[in-house]
Image (cartoon, rainbow, N blue to C red; front, side, top):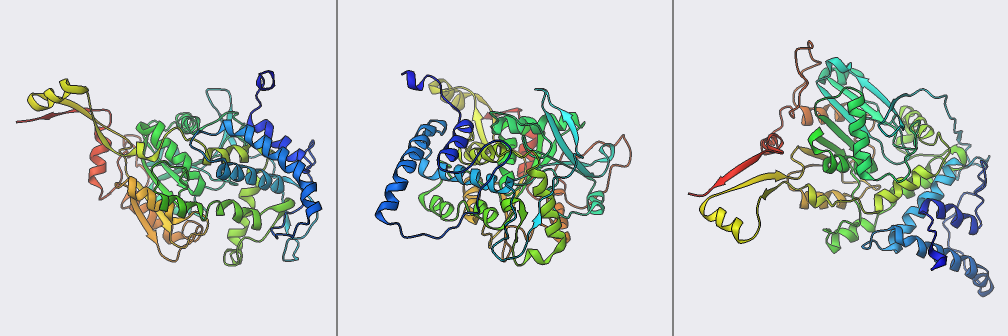
Length: 460
């Protein structure tokens, strides 16, 4: 028992795992060669050379399995986390190699600190950025957590300030712990992520409900807000949202469809961006837009500002570990007081007090059917278990094309979520809007008004 008396966290184990496998991880200098994905033919003596290191790596990963929930298959989960660790090392290392096309990539540049920060109740500082209408004239306050390899500069890429003003929107984005200029948060989970969002809203004077926008892997924090702080969230909009591939309610077909492509998101970044401290090619289509390339480079430069791999590993672990809830928990259901025969008698002869549970606000999801990063099977699963969610399927759209630098797309999104534009608040006597504009989903409006209120079912 003495051998297991002191347990290391996976944060401590992963660097030592990489070090033992031959990758240098010492001090500030990180040297790692760009990996290749060819499959060489191994001779018998070569297998003998790798048997020892592979056995040791297997032993270490087996010991780390205790940090995964019991229903997680390490064959799937740990390769994802380990892959992100290698990705992070590659993004943070610096050398003078060229990319695969033979073109010199643009050097990654860490800009001087520029963020405004707020102090959270636990003493951490959170960096944030806001655009749109001033706080005192905001009709709608939208908070947008960023995704993997992004930062507070992500937000809604290319959204026009004039469009935000037309709808009276105050858009607030922030750096997740350890990203950009936000302090790290060891041991963070999705519950703490939702509370961070609430604390930020409180610090910025958002006293009414706010809207949450989640893109790609940033959607896991939107799901968390729906679960842990539902009374503060008016509505949620998501684009190509990530779903935990271990959702217990997934059918075998849905899980197979998810895992056949997952983790293409990580593979995409790994092959095309920010390897060895250089900006690589993004895609043939998007690279033709200088504005996209400039935005993309600046956003990722900010995300790796602190030079630490930990936030990337933490974010990957959150994606494939136990979220503390299932999406099924967000279903709107009637929960009635009392159990057993007494409750049955009350229902038959008297009155039963019930209340609505789950997330009662409107939820909109936009999903490109040609998305090669986040498979559309994830959204299909959401539509099955959360029938109140409104899914907008986008033929011929990919992971970036609808959300990035598309004025008409942004306008259509705002029209869907907020209804006709009403502009900023005219004066301080006009209260911020807490409804959902001109939504046609009136049953969701009723649910929002009924949250936390009991109602009575009477049999005649």
